[in-house]
Image (cartoon, rainbow, N blue to C red; front, side, top):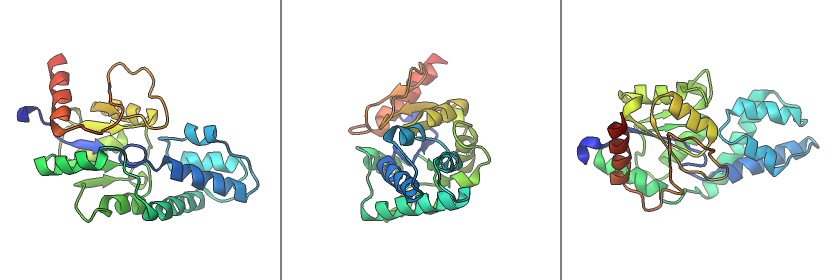
Length: 223
């Protein structure tokens, strides 16, 4: 099975590696309330997987009278502060990530969040978890555009079609598919729809490097 190891595993951050979506929801709602606007749970769910400037635009439409970069900075600061109190790892995610490191499989963190938050999570265990980090500042087009995952694969020196993307959102799944990677969806807060060419795992709990290798092998067999 080792011949079928993925060339690399590219991880989404929010909702996939860590369940910070509730932290973002708190930050968004608090900022809108500060400007006497209205914000609902469904508003936040619609933004899962979107670029932060898209989020800023929606908050502006709800009355937040700040420029987009200030909105992004305020949201990121709030989520970072909440995460410092407790990093909310998704079930099985850290264990699988550490196992990939033991097997020598290259890993990248590919997120539309800003670099300070991504680097905080990546360094929160005191171990090196990723060989590369791609953030929203590093790309010109956010997910669902494939640029972020293509950049992640390039930084690792691998072909995207030989890599696995782990995602929890529809924009992220679309980004990984457009990059020609094998996509495994791990839904957290939103349904991932009816993509017939991705694998769905309810969580990463109990999942192993061998399970990832099996997904690669099955995809190679279908080519």
